[in-house]
Length: 104
View 1: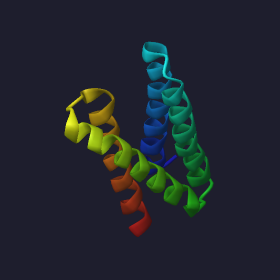
View 2 (view 1 turned 180 degrees about the horizontal axis):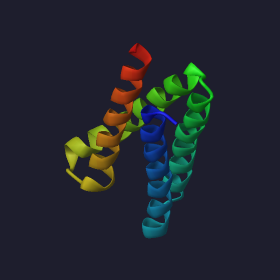
View 3 (view 1 turned 60 degrees about the vertical axis):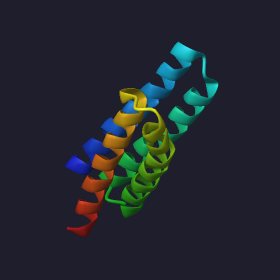
View 4 (view 1 turned 135 degrees about the horizontal axis):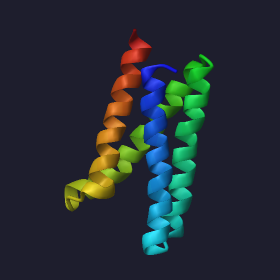
């Protein structure tokens, strides 16, 4: 497995875990559903990337941008390390590695 796929897998697992933690701590079904869907899409993207399908990288970039778009404004309003800052940082790292690998 190459580096962009590993980074994306870590981000996907973190997003799923974050959704579960949102449900456990705040009983937020929305967190569980959103975390499962977006994290699952990132893990699907890894599956596609490992098989050499470029659409996987594009899917991962799109989902990462979606998550940054969701958590970025929240981070700007109220600085919280968990989950806002971590999602934004991991999203930017994921996008950076994916774009770099696509342009190579």
